[in-house]
Image 1 (cartoon, rainbow, N blue to C red):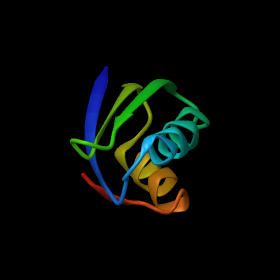
Image 2 (cartoon, rainbow, N blue to C red; image 1 turned 30 degrees about the horizontal axis):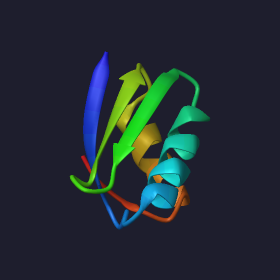
Image 3 (spheres, rainbow, N blue to C red; image 1 turned 45 degrees about the horizontal axis):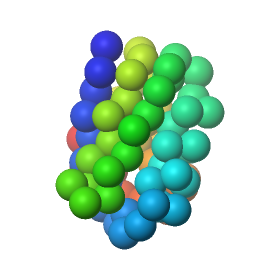
Image 4 (cartoon, rainbow, N blue to C red; image 1 turned 180 degrees about the vertical axis):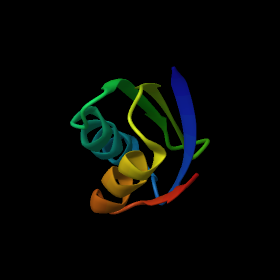
Length: 65
């Protein structure tokens, strides 16, 4: 299952990598692809929205679910 979330605060490739790494570390996440130009992350897997939001926040960004 793919889930697209909005993430505010990403401004470069390094930001994308930080968010992708944080999400990829979660159990149930198979892949995460961030795009700072559209402020979105597409997450493949079955992690809960609350877990996704917490991982994004822990990485220093603001999720909008």
